[in-house]
Length: 395
Image (cartoon, rainbow, N blue to C red; front, side, top):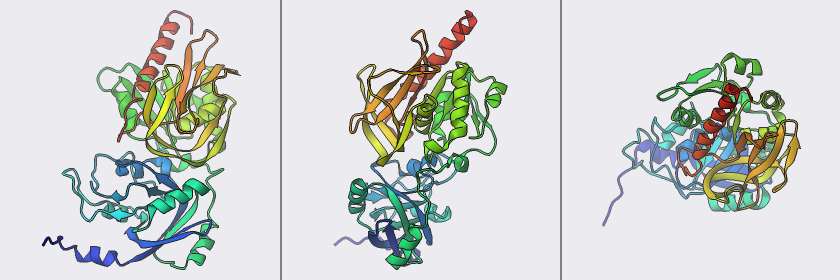
């Protein structure tokens, strides 16, 4: 007869603390407290990655969202001090089915439950995450509340309905750096890039540093004068939370950069703002793309990349058609093979040369996959090309 190891007293006590989850359409689920006790609200989205929960929880793009993990067993690898994608956990809440009793990784320094508690993140375990996921897939992302203090579904639902919607929310200023920071190039510095932090992940400037780029991470309120002051060879817009239709200041900055011919690369939120800068629209997806192993086709090469996604909004652009803009000709460069959502844009000048580009997915994804890491090389090539033309007097 086998015997499981006895749980610590605090774990046995916590396992008895009831918790309640209520969606804004009234559907509710009961479970037990996981992470911090208390109450939290946000937009409920499901995340389909089978691994990489630490990177997910510390991704600033999840600010004000309650993440439902579709993987049934969470916490196996615990928590360490190396895999964070930013300075803190950003999710508003975390929903899981089965919590790992103990971490089982040599890299782990503490449990996921303990880290959620220490950062004050309210979660719930022991709920049917498959049922929640199917509900969100059919009804769409919606507001949600989790509580260990209010266990009456009707009363918690009242507070859920009082929460702000994600549509129209400008959240980049909540997650951006307070002061400019510099990440040095690894080896010889070849270029200087101004990275506007709209919710940047730490792996992004690291990918650039590997390619000889010195990255100046600037606050979301950066101006074009700030870019000129550092002598930027290129501009980068990061991923981030919120509705792109509310980020007017950043769109104006990008339009100034495009007018000046500054090479541009954008990821995720940066793709949506690129679309707006080019005169295209954006819209909210029903439940978004949140997870890994999403197939995307590069329409130029017809190559299919397996990619990581985290977005609830998308660019409204015609696939297979050129769009004239004040800065050149724009075109959809990538599409998601699951649903034809626009996954990339490119801008070419009047000579047909690539001037700027962006992707909706995450080529920097620390937890993988890494099929699209070549896009950082493309950014380097873009800056090299402009530098050569400037030297030859044809900027």
